[in-house]
Image (cartoon, rainbow, N blue to C red):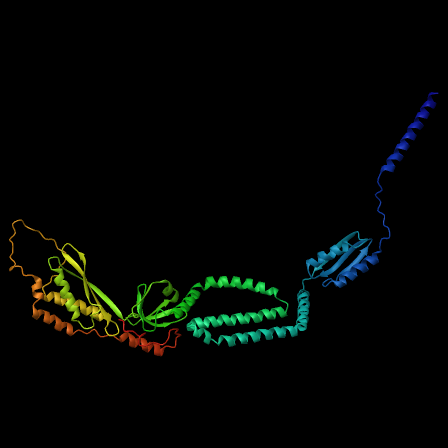
Length: 453
């Protein structure tokens, strides 16, 4: 009985184990790959071959397909094509894997092949666009000729009173604008107007670079235009710029050339003349000179002033109107400083000669009149000093009123030479006649070739 029970239990356990195994087997996923209507390897190879034949640079690729695995061999032009064909092959239906064994071409001929092909395409495009290209070139040439013709018609700007340099600059702008219009029309015919923005951008960068590189040249050129338009001086004018003096020889587009009183050529950049104080001594023919004289504090300054004025009145070249003047400049410990002023006409009288002779004659008149021009001294006054009578201390000005001495000073003044010195003018004219350097100033006139010393 016990054996039957054990047998029944064993059969039950076996049956339950079989049922459990069948249930567990039915719950496992089906991992088998099923292919329905998968293309054959030959069809995959033909499809990929047609694709490679249509792409430039992939003509030499060898393709083999085995069980959906594609193997690529051969040479391609570059790595980009190598990656592209791998992506294309992996997207074909029925492809399981792609083995890329392609090599990049290293031969010079193969490297030049794409460039040659590109050149051929460009040549073909150029031949097709040749009529439009010729029309564009014709437009540029015609507008360039028109700009040149207009640039030679500068009579209008001349009538406006512009200088030669300003007129030339204006005509250059006219020519540039007309030529630029022709270039824009040519670009429009070639459907290349997008190049205009690029050209303007490049021109802006180049302009900034050139502006920094040639800043001084541009400043001097523009300053030359302003100077030739404003005409602050003429040929032969005696001018001073900062501490530099000389007579104007010529004005160029870059600098102004002066002849100094030593006969040297001095070139000053135009920009410095524009931005610096400038004195023109020739524009007004009348010019005043001045000098200081120190006299004793014990003198009658009214009589001193009268003697100096009478001496200058008797000197040739000194104008009666405006008349000479004598002013008290400073009162020192032992000296009174007086300042003497006098006017002359530079057209007839040399400035340096007249001033030199005026100083000499005033000193001579003061010496003859006994007027002291002392140096600074210290005086000691004693309590019991002897007082001198008026006869013991004759006034120095008494001699100044004596007719013989005054007549001697007048005769000395009549013998002075204050005529204009034409040495620099002669050298300047000789230089102008010999030199062929550009000169933007008009030809010298009698007034321009002033006699300033």
